[in-house]
Image (cartoon, rainbow, N blue to C red; front, side):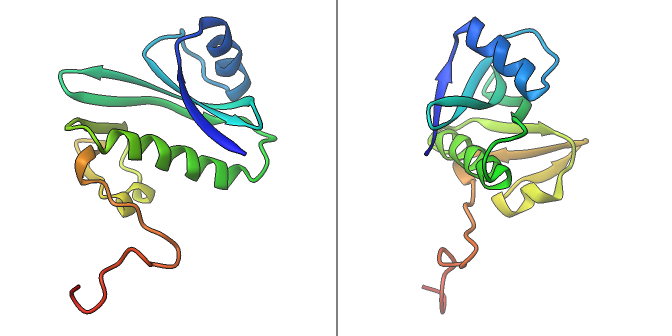
Length: 131
């Protein structure tokens, strides 16, 4: 089972940064992805003046169904942020983020978190006949 929690435990985060290939000092706001109680992913963010910058996002190799885990992890973080008035910025203009409502701006992907869209493969969240 996949779960997500925030952590400020430096010993956990140091090991997780190393495990996921993040080459940075432990810092910022860290969301941790757990697979059956084992930490397998981390998203390192900073909050400054109402802007959340996603600095690093990584899921360890060897994680079962890694692509699904990455999608679950990203959607969970974005969902939690969507209850706030913050602006989310991610370095790079990644077309994969467009489906969530991100726009390209000055080499970054940006989104007002409260306006996030959560598309589904079955498109069940799309309006039918204008309703």
